[in-house]
Amino acid sequence: MFCPNCGASVPPDAPFCTNCGAQQPVGNRQAPPPGQTPPGYDPQAYPPSGQNPQGYPPPGANPQGFNPPPGYNPQGFTPPLPGAVPYVPRSGVTVATGRWISEGWQLVQADLATHVLIALIFLALSGIVPIVLQGPLLAGVHISFARKLLYGRVEVGDVFKGFNYFVPALIASLIISVFVTAGFLLCIIPGIVLAALYQFTYLFIVDKRMDFWPAMQASFDVVKQNWFGFTLFIFTLGLIQLLGVLACIVGLLVTLPIMYAAITVAYRDNVGFEPNSIP
Amino acid sequence: MLALNLTRFPERFVALAALAILAGVTPSATFVLCPFRALTELPCLFCGITRGVSAMLHGDWRSALELHAFSPIAVAGLMTVVLNGSMPARAIKPVALLLVLYGVGRLAWGMASRMNLSMSFFSF
Image (cartoon, rainbow over all chains, first blue to last red; front, side):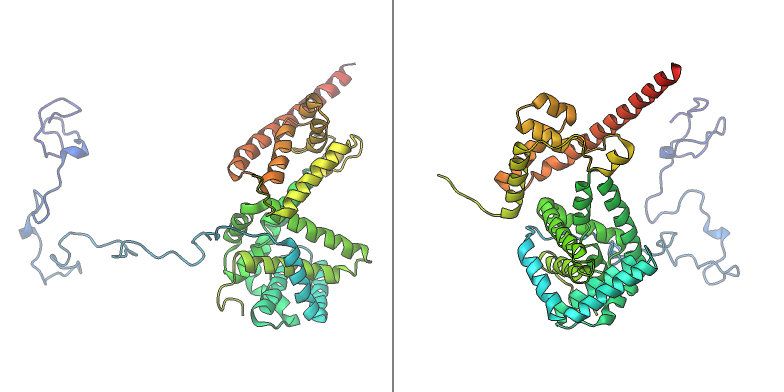
């Protein structure tokens, strides 16, 4: 070996040049084979085992000379946190706009007074406190239909169960509102497509306990497989809302529940509920 | 052998209806539905596709390309939906990317020409 600084001949394992003192490249120094002491190590310089007033671990406790880093898992990996795994949609989504809307209408019809009251609470509270309460209340509306589908019962109080997911539901509703508004500004149709792409976000939040962004991505991944069909589904639901508005606006109290019921039915058919997730 | 496949009927029906309506009716150039164009009088990314598809179906491909360069692709996409029930998933990403590039470029061009216009106005 030759020193890269002065060119003098250097022993192959010397850390510094014997001529000019310049540090040698790392490859020059070879690690001692395991089990051997590195050159220059003098066991006499250290106190014998068991007499260690400074509190250092006794030599020999760890023959490799270092401890595994904190959090090291001898199995070779750490299990991912729940919700960190991206949702993989099942292949072959189906869009059954007519069946979903009629089943949604049946759900609403079965407990008409309850759902009208929930819609009234939703409209009133998101009118009194705009923006902030919309997301959690929407999560609650979806919970009410999920409970009806899963357990066959629904209460007015279900709409407030969305407040258990306050932060993800709030942030999701803010982001989706911005996206959909921007889409509507660009010739309207992109707004409908975006509303369709993120239609299952609240259900992923309340059912799969996802955070807002994984939930939005999961909804996107499910819908994009037939985004044209899902866009027609949302467009049809939007037309139904228009009918509700035309019916003296009061019609919204019936048409809004139909929309979220139909979306919940679509979620059941294309994603499926987790066992024991919805309270 | 004619194998008539009627899955995804609503999608096919809507795409066919859109093609039929735009082949029969020419959308008005003065009635502006797009909020962006109504507010700024500049074309948004998608402005002109409806009129472009209509012009395309009337055989006027030259003004179709002037209205929106993606009019032929939109016609092809609608026809694909009529035939297959969905758009080819692999084509969506590159088409969307090119569409954004084209739309932003057209918007920048519109803004630049408007500024030129106002500057020439001031020079008088």
